[in-house]
Image 1 (cartoon, rainbow, N blue to C red):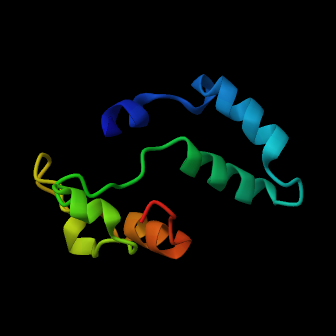
Image 2: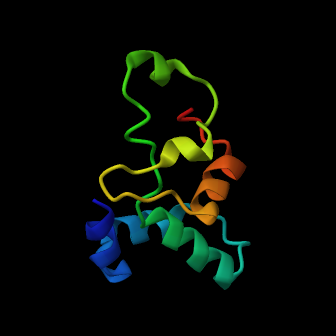
Length: 93
């Protein structure tokens, strides 16, 4: 999924672009708009290997950064991706 998201060009997100242009506040700078669209059109980090029981889906906090380790790719989530999730206090957790 991550590789697929990386390979898609932003111009392929026609429906997302239409929604974005209609919904995002007009008072954002062009740089802010580009950054936000980039975030919306990419796959975010998810702790797939950590989420291995139903109890974990009841947790109300973002898991620790160490829990975002990806066994399939043998890599950790980078600081920027984790910080983005943490700073947004995503309602998923």
